[in-house]
Length: 109
Image 1 (cartoon, rainbow, N blue to C red):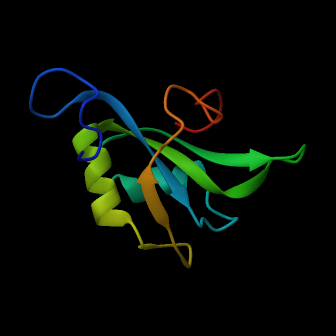
Image 2: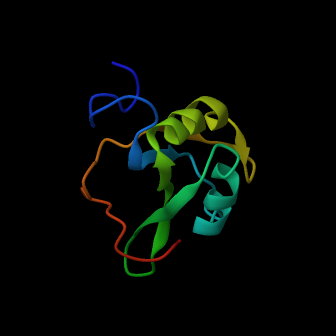
């Protein structure tokens, strides 16, 4: 089944936001860096760098929510294995849908 299909009714671009997982991020990458990089593929609703521990150290991965399924698919096709802060990032559809372990509770925008 193609990316994101089967989640809604009707045809054409689907609305409601679609999250993609981004791995292999540099420790220096911020939510704003992710947002700026992903704007090449479409409108970005929200970005988040996943962190761990009391100091909030980056786990080297993040989540980007695009405005449509088509934008998210475009981001995967267009930006996967591209350079961001000296590292080739890996992008795939987020498997933790509906908030999951890494919902968008704080930070970023």
